[in-house]
Image (cartoon, rainbow, N blue to C red; front, side):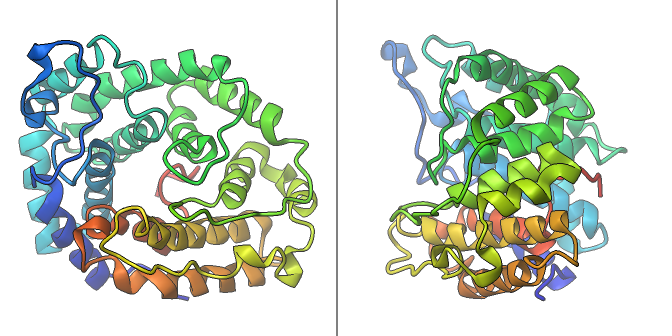
Length: 339
């Protein structure tokens, strides 16, 4: 089974350091309320103004901080720490917070970017000798407050395979909340049970043409965290024929026809995120469950399809390494462990 190595870690850190500060091209998430809003995006986002868009910059920082912690002696890790010292400082965080206080910013990056910011803060706090976690804490608390306000109003789950997928966001947010915000963790668990507990015989009609998440597998990932020891019976009812590799759609890696097309390139992310999900599901079920070996093989098949394409075109290069890291670790962001 393909796993994370020091060589891969060095390659990913070098790749991502190359675009964390790359100002152009950049896709802004901004509602203009007046002419004063016409300003360079790096003024709106003193930290997260690279990597093509805000959320990719956030999880790019998550990725390099995590790799620098796991492989601290690599030369690339020293470069990561230097960039974090420069960028993850209170004055820059204040600028990010100021953007959130603008009119019509309530839906900014909801919920995908919110969740990745919490994952970044969680990772930053694991660097116990660095000030980055303390600097990011006000921003993390601001997004946690947004989850508190939003989730009670979200009547129906967002089951899509793109940035709006609620199961993905809650998996990451729950990992942050468990040790910091018991009320948010309880709210996430309650909403997950309300939305997903009675789901049965999922048909897995996927993928869509621009998806980078599996709605079926992300739901299972979240429920593995929420249900704990009760996950296996739920999963057996949710995907009752998985041991026989059905639905087949969950086992066939997506074909990526054009990696220069940003939306079609999402499908490489789907393969990587499915690998992450399959590995996490296998771990939650345990080695003696009949699905575990099938899930591990599915993870390997999906990794093999897209791991070679993390770099090559900027439409994938600005974000795929983060999802490759999730897949290679098998747990990663949102994990209940604090590796």
